[in-house]
Image 1 (spheres, helix red, strand yellow):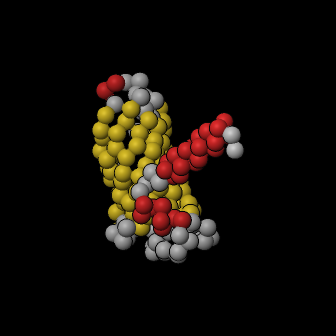
Image 2 (image 1 turned 60 degrees about the horizontal axis):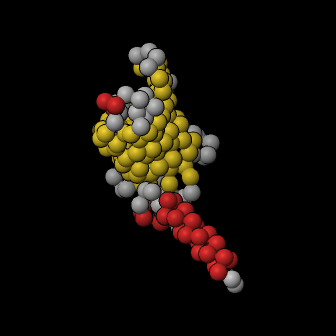
Image 3 (image 1 turned 90 degrees about the vertical axis):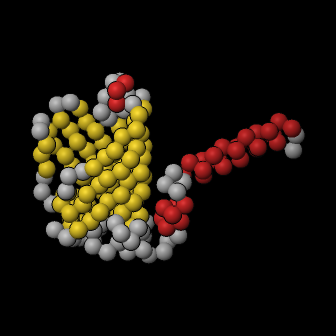
Length: 164
């Protein structure tokens, strides 16, 4: 192998290693549980959800929105599709002043959950994408998001679930 091929090979290996490092943005618990193939049942996800978390926003058109923030939802009545497909949705459509709020998602792998919330109003759209595992006390994981004001956001969250 000549030096040029050796350098290209080393560069390619470096990109692969960096790619694998990026896959673990939720930490080892999420990665291990989602990749292991071990069945980790969620139990009953039907119920009243409250999502709370901490994150940071950057790249906002309105500089006042850049920085750390906390999130806390109102109570969301969530149901799992009865077909066994594991689709999540709100029990009833939810309106907010000047718009609407949606939640949708799917159970993925054997013990992982991904869902999206979207709040649309006259002021624009705020969307968060959540990836979670069952912590034994509810759900926990990390999120990424976009909006308001062209913001990009990242953070950690938890969901407490109680009966309807």
